[in-house]
Length: 79
Image (cartoon, rainbow, N blue to C red; front, side):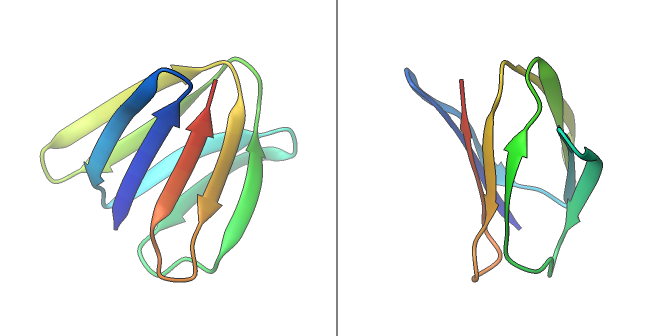
């Protein structure tokens, strides 16, 4: 699935992922290929874990929102 992480200063990450893990105020969640559309607030001072065929990346975020689009893309607006 396509993942894009955007910050106020520009793109932080754009690429393909097998799955991602994040934390909202309600708890930990994972997004896999084929996930239903979703909008979630990201917990303040948490990390976003992106796993792709090329390895794993962790991004420390101060907060933001994650959107799984109807077409299956994941868009993250982080700050």
